[in-house]
Image (cartoon, rainbow, N blue to C red; front, side, top):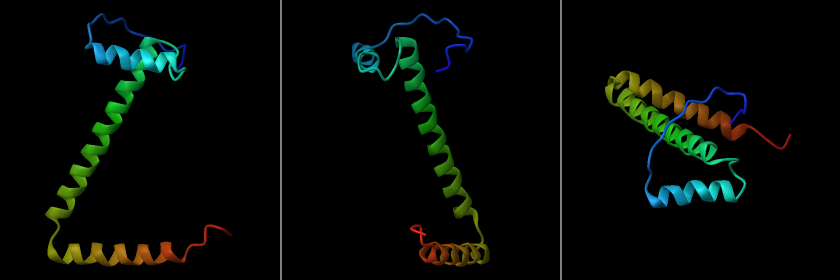
Length: 91
C-alpha cells in the first residue's frame, strides 16, 4: 500500500487464526504492518468477489442467448481458437 494514502481508523477484534494469518504476513515481510496485511487480505477478497460476479454475469449472458446468437458465439469462439493456435509466441 502507498504510505501517503489517507487511512481511516478502525477498531475491531478478530478470530485468533485471522490474527495469526495477518501476523504471518508481517513476519514474512509480505506486509509492512498489520494494517497493510489486512488491506492485502481485503483486496484479495474483493478480487475474488469480482471474479465470481464476472463468472455469474457471463453464465447468465450465455444462458439468455437465443439459439441463433449462441450459434454465432460458438462460430466466433472456434475462429478465435483457430487463430490462437496459429500464433507463434517464440517469434
